[in-house]
Length: 311
Image 1 (tube, rainbow, N blue to C red):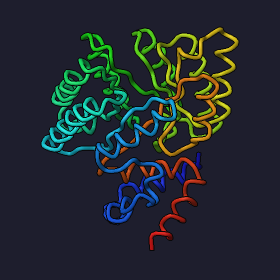
Image 2: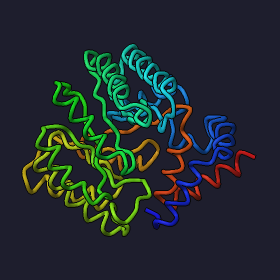
Image 3: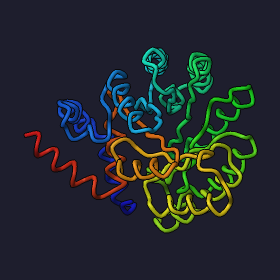
Image 4: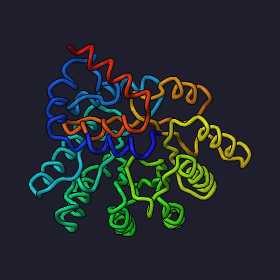
């Protein structure tokens, strides 16, 4: 994890229209292009191909159609239609059935009620076909409303949904207790957003400590825990906690991002753990890509090398 100033810098870059246009022109131009290390492609067909490769390595997957901060209802409706089409395409392909989405992609910045309706449409199409939908967590201004919408749908009988919590937010340990009490599944992440110190830990050590505490709580009190990390220390903690508490390896899973730590993924599978890979795809990939760069310095050198190779 970079320091907070570096993370803020990459979030600023993520909002640059000029960089986004350049990235769209060159970032996915050929299979060897730099962005394809982290993003499967711009189409659901490319995501399905990537998913098949993940399954061949004895792992499961969740498809993440990139997009957020939709500013009008027509775009929110278009995103909903894309999700419905993706559900149909994945079902026809016969691969695993997991989706991740952001509520701002479905119109949360415009109309909360329509956002809920759009999510219900996706669940109505996906649940009968065996899909599990993970509602992603965005930056802190959306935490309350995201959990409220999630809980509303859960209490209305939707059981093939889960939510994400970020250990970087000071409130998240209480939110974990709240979601565990519901009986719902949590995907635990550290958090990739730049947040003010009033709501989030600023030091990496504090974020890690909160993650460790939440990890143990999730394993011992949670429901189908999803430990989303590439941090070997956190993975070791999860394995040690499970062993000491008699928690079976098939009752929780590790989750990692496409293109990151494939060696570690393979090792965990070999040791008998469940591993799920998040596969991002779609035309709106640039903000996601910038956040990945902001999380790890080694990623920057890789991308700069890739950019130079494009010339």
